[in-house]
Image: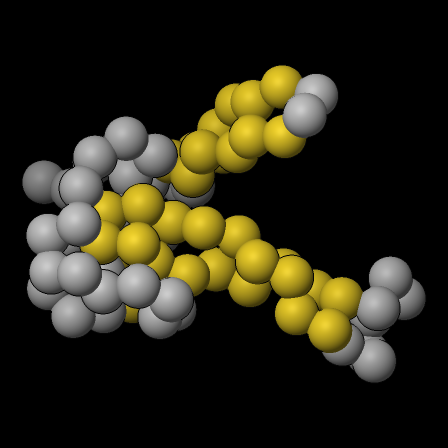
Length: 79
């Protein structure tokens, strides 16, 4: 049974995590290791420039998997 997916957040002001609903699970696109805020497969936020956003950018997600070495690819998603 898959565990809940948690995304760790850090900034100069502190840290924390976001827990996704049970029906959403993120995986490494190569080896299918589940993403977690602590573990062998981590998720990172990054900024993308976007003319469609009022702020000029949107957030993207990428995987940093220590099991298979996958880095910078978007996660696989299961609903």
